[in-house]
Length: 186
Image 1: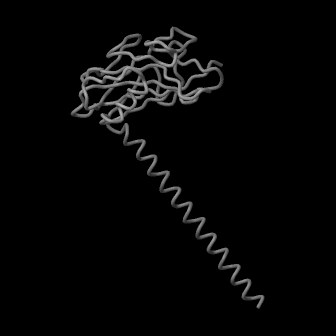
Image 2: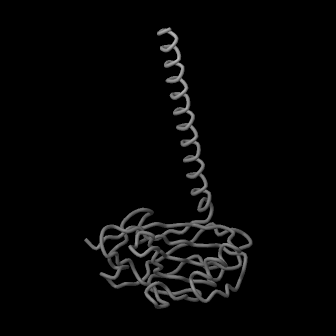
Protein backbone atom coordinates (compact mmCIF):
# COMPACT_ATOMS: atom_id res chain seq x y z
CA UNK A 1 0.00 0.00 0.00
CA UNK A 2 2.82 2.34 0.74
CA UNK A 3 4.18 1.79 -2.76
CA UNK A 4 0.86 2.91 -4.22
CA UNK A 5 1.07 6.17 -2.27
CA UNK A 6 4.56 6.80 -3.57
CA UNK A 7 3.42 6.19 -7.12
CA UNK A 8 0.41 8.39 -6.52
CA UNK A 9 2.67 11.10 -5.09
CA UNK A 10 5.00 10.79 -8.08
CA UNK A 11 2.03 11.12 -10.42
CA UNK A 12 0.87 14.23 -8.56
CA UNK A 13 4.37 15.72 -8.70
CA UNK A 14 4.56 14.99 -12.41
CA UNK A 15 1.12 16.57 -12.92
CA UNK A 16 2.21 19.67 -11.02
CA UNK A 17 5.47 19.89 -12.97
CA UNK A 18 3.58 19.50 -16.24
CA UNK A 19 1.13 22.21 -15.15
CA UNK A 20 3.99 24.56 -14.18
CA UNK A 21 5.69 23.88 -17.51
CA UNK A 22 2.44 24.55 -19.40
CA UNK A 23 1.83 27.79 -17.51
CA UNK A 24 5.43 28.87 -18.14
CA UNK A 25 5.14 28.15 -21.84
CA UNK A 26 1.85 30.05 -22.04
CA UNK A 27 3.36 32.98 -20.17
CA UNK A 28 6.34 33.04 -22.52
CA UNK A 29 4.00 32.83 -25.50
CA UNK A 30 1.85 35.69 -24.17
CA UNK A 31 4.91 37.78 -23.40
CA UNK A 32 6.22 37.19 -26.90
CA UNK A 33 2.86 38.21 -28.42
CA UNK A 34 2.79 41.35 -26.28
CA UNK A 35 6.28 42.28 -27.42
CA UNK A 36 5.43 41.76 -31.08
CA UNK A 37 2.25 43.85 -30.74
CA UNK A 38 4.26 46.71 -29.22
CA UNK A 39 6.82 46.43 -32.00
CA UNK A 40 4.12 46.41 -34.68
CA UNK A 41 2.58 49.62 -33.36
CA UNK A 42 5.71 51.52 -34.32
CA UNK A 43 7.22 49.00 -36.71
CA UNK A 44 6.65 51.11 -39.82
CA UNK A 45 6.07 54.69 -38.73
CA UNK A 46 8.87 56.13 -36.64
CA UNK A 47 9.41 59.05 -34.30
CA UNK A 48 12.99 59.94 -33.38
CA UNK A 49 14.96 62.81 -31.92
CA UNK A 50 18.56 63.84 -32.51
CA UNK A 51 18.55 65.04 -28.87
CA UNK A 52 18.23 61.56 -27.29
CA UNK A 53 17.95 57.90 -28.22
CA UNK A 54 15.07 55.58 -27.32
CA UNK A 55 15.14 54.87 -23.57
CA UNK A 56 17.98 57.32 -22.90
CA UNK A 57 18.04 60.42 -20.70
CA UNK A 58 16.45 63.57 -22.12
CA UNK A 59 18.97 66.44 -22.03
CA UNK A 60 18.38 69.04 -19.30
CA UNK A 61 17.91 71.74 -21.97
CA UNK A 62 14.42 70.30 -22.74
CA UNK A 63 13.28 70.16 -19.09
CA UNK A 64 12.04 72.50 -16.36
CA UNK A 65 15.64 72.70 -15.14
CA UNK A 66 16.84 73.93 -18.51
CA UNK A 67 15.28 76.03 -21.24
CA UNK A 68 12.00 74.07 -21.08
CA UNK A 69 11.73 73.89 -24.89
CA UNK A 70 10.67 70.95 -27.01
CA UNK A 71 13.38 68.79 -28.58
CA UNK A 72 13.54 68.34 -32.33
CA UNK A 73 11.38 65.40 -33.42
CA UNK A 74 11.57 63.60 -36.75
CA UNK A 75 8.91 61.36 -38.31
CA UNK A 76 9.35 58.75 -41.01
CA UNK A 77 7.40 55.95 -42.69
CA UNK A 78 4.08 57.74 -42.17
CA UNK A 79 1.48 55.38 -43.68
CA UNK A 80 -0.46 56.07 -46.87
CA UNK A 81 -3.93 57.42 -46.18
CA UNK A 82 -2.76 59.63 -43.32
CA UNK A 83 -4.76 62.87 -43.33
CA UNK A 84 -3.25 64.40 -40.18
CA UNK A 85 -0.90 63.66 -37.32
CA UNK A 86 -1.21 64.18 -33.57
CA UNK A 87 1.41 64.14 -30.83
CA UNK A 88 0.94 63.56 -27.12
CA UNK A 89 3.85 63.70 -24.66
CA UNK A 90 3.06 62.11 -21.32
CA UNK A 91 4.61 60.90 -18.07
CA UNK A 92 2.95 57.73 -16.72
CA UNK A 93 5.14 57.79 -13.59
CA UNK A 94 3.67 61.00 -12.14
CA UNK A 95 2.37 60.57 -8.57
CA UNK A 96 -1.13 61.78 -9.51
CA UNK A 97 -1.47 59.58 -12.60
CA UNK A 98 -0.55 60.28 -16.22
CA UNK A 99 0.79 63.83 -16.57
CA UNK A 100 0.37 65.37 -20.02
CA UNK A 101 3.32 67.55 -21.08
CA UNK A 102 2.43 68.53 -24.63
CA UNK A 103 -0.45 67.96 -27.03
CA UNK A 104 -0.49 68.79 -30.74
CA UNK A 105 -3.38 68.01 -33.07
CA UNK A 106 -4.08 68.71 -36.75
CA UNK A 107 -0.45 68.42 -37.77
CA UNK A 108 -0.30 68.39 -41.58
CA UNK A 109 0.16 64.84 -42.88
CA UNK A 110 3.23 65.94 -44.88
CA UNK A 111 5.15 67.22 -41.83
CA UNK A 112 8.21 65.10 -41.09
CA UNK A 113 9.91 67.24 -38.46
CA UNK A 114 9.14 69.51 -35.53
CA UNK A 115 12.08 71.85 -35.04
CA UNK A 116 13.44 72.49 -31.56
CA UNK A 117 11.38 75.14 -29.73
CA UNK A 118 8.69 75.28 -32.41
CA UNK A 119 5.08 74.30 -32.94
CA UNK A 120 3.31 72.64 -35.86
CA UNK A 121 -0.42 72.06 -35.74
CA UNK A 122 -2.69 73.20 -32.93
CA UNK A 123 -1.75 72.92 -29.27
CA UNK A 124 -4.21 71.61 -26.69
CA UNK A 125 -4.09 72.38 -22.95
CA UNK A 126 -1.75 70.09 -21.01
CA UNK A 127 -1.64 69.07 -17.33
CA UNK A 128 0.23 72.29 -16.50
CA UNK A 129 -2.90 74.14 -17.62
CA UNK A 130 -1.21 75.70 -20.63
CA UNK A 131 -1.09 75.08 -24.36
CA UNK A 132 2.70 75.07 -24.61
CA UNK A 133 5.31 72.39 -24.24
CA UNK A 134 6.04 71.66 -20.58
CA UNK A 135 9.27 69.74 -20.23
CA UNK A 136 10.06 66.87 -17.89
CA UNK A 137 10.00 67.96 -14.25
CA UNK A 138 9.64 64.89 -12.00
CA UNK A 139 9.16 65.58 -8.29
CA UNK A 140 11.45 62.64 -7.44
CA UNK A 141 13.15 59.69 -9.06
CA UNK A 142 13.55 58.96 -12.73
CA UNK A 143 10.41 59.22 -14.84
CA UNK A 144 9.63 57.96 -18.36
CA UNK A 145 8.36 60.40 -20.98
CA UNK A 146 6.48 58.99 -23.97
CA UNK A 147 6.33 60.98 -27.20
CA UNK A 148 3.37 59.33 -28.96
CA UNK A 149 2.88 60.12 -32.63
CA UNK A 150 -0.42 59.17 -34.24
CA UNK A 151 -1.19 58.87 -37.96
CA UNK A 152 -4.89 59.60 -38.39
CA UNK A 153 -7.44 59.10 -41.17
CA UNK A 154 -9.15 62.39 -40.31
CA UNK A 155 -7.93 65.83 -41.31
CA UNK A 156 -9.48 68.08 -38.69
CA UNK A 157 -9.57 66.74 -35.13
CA UNK A 158 -12.22 68.73 -33.28
CA UNK A 159 -11.37 67.78 -29.68
CA UNK A 160 -10.91 70.68 -27.28
CA UNK A 161 -9.10 68.81 -24.48
CA UNK A 162 -6.73 65.87 -24.22
CA UNK A 163 -9.37 63.37 -23.08
CA UNK A 164 -11.61 64.17 -26.05
CA UNK A 165 -8.57 64.03 -28.34
CA UNK A 166 -7.57 60.60 -27.05
CA UNK A 167 -11.09 59.32 -27.75
CA UNK A 168 -11.02 60.84 -31.23
CA UNK A 169 -7.56 59.37 -31.87
CA UNK A 170 -8.81 55.88 -30.98
CA UNK A 171 -11.56 56.21 -33.61
CA UNK A 172 -9.26 57.52 -36.37
CA UNK A 173 -5.84 55.99 -35.65
CA UNK A 174 -4.06 54.30 -38.54
CA UNK A 175 -0.77 53.79 -36.74
CA UNK A 176 1.12 54.88 -33.63
CA UNK A 177 4.85 55.35 -33.07
CA UNK A 178 6.46 55.89 -29.69
CA UNK A 179 9.72 57.45 -28.54
CA UNK A 180 10.48 57.11 -24.82
CA UNK A 181 13.04 59.18 -22.95
CA UNK A 182 13.84 59.39 -19.24
CA UNK A 183 14.63 62.22 -16.88
CA UNK A 184 15.59 62.72 -13.25
CA UNK A 185 16.30 66.01 -11.51
CA UNK A 186 19.09 64.36 -9.51
